[in-house]
Image (cartoon, rainbow, N blue to C red; front, side, top):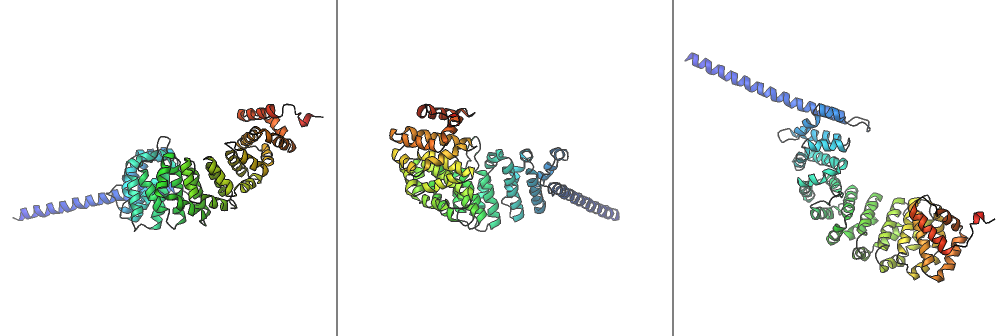
Length: 442
């Protein structure tokens, strides 16, 4: 009896020792994981932004594999959050870094982190996915296939979502909406509906990213009708009056792409009083704002005759001419391109109006530009004005000679850009064949 009791006690002691050893082993494994993550974080969070994690070392030490392993459910939330944070830093190294992370199986695990009840875990998962998308856009379709859109949309729909988290989600959606070389994103309807909600958020950064996401979606003409049906246009136009220039800029970029659609889609913009808002922004001190306005006007002018006339009726031409007179090359280029689109159908009344408004001297001054796009558009417009009506010929040719532009056109006949040289030769041979070169006249 005593022997049996001793054996029982010894067995119990052995089991306790075995359990203790297992616990110690598990503790050491946990400490090793934390050490791996801390080492990765230390390497990734270097003070110099030019230093990125070395790929060879990452592969040699299996750092990425260890971090991806640490994203799993069996780990403490702190470990999972830190692992996602470390991977986000590694992803910022390059596209190659990001693709290595994806190859190690991180994407499905990061997507699962999004709906974690732990706010830090969810946040780090979202930020890491955003970095992967930013540095490796080729991962977009793979993420969508793994259900990232549904997870992000559910966060937007949740009333309890904090502003910071909503900002992270909107940033990732902006990245998801960037068109790939092969296709637009799946779930585009679901994404667009979520963006329609975000466009009414009061936070500037959320508005900016949501508008840029709309811009990215509208890059594909097939999505423009869907965006119009959702009713996003009135809200985007309203946001042109936003006090934050970044929000204004993003709204204009969204409208540039929407205005690249059909005549009916352009008319939808005009029906929502787009032109008065653009007219007000033409006086904005920000160069980018005015350039974006001109690009929208160019797209509107590319519609039909009535839409070109609407630009004239809104009193925008003299503001476009003011941009032609400015010193900023991007502004000059955008203004010249807008005017060239206004005269695309060679409407005599419109061309006569432009002549009376003093367009020709301003165009001639731009022939000295170093920008080939400006030179070509100016030559093309001058050729159109010379060609459209014999009654215009004497006045237009006289202004070209008077402004000193004729010699510039002669020089451009030998321009290295063939399309410029062709138009210049046509103007000289058709309208100034007997005029001597003023520089060699005497």
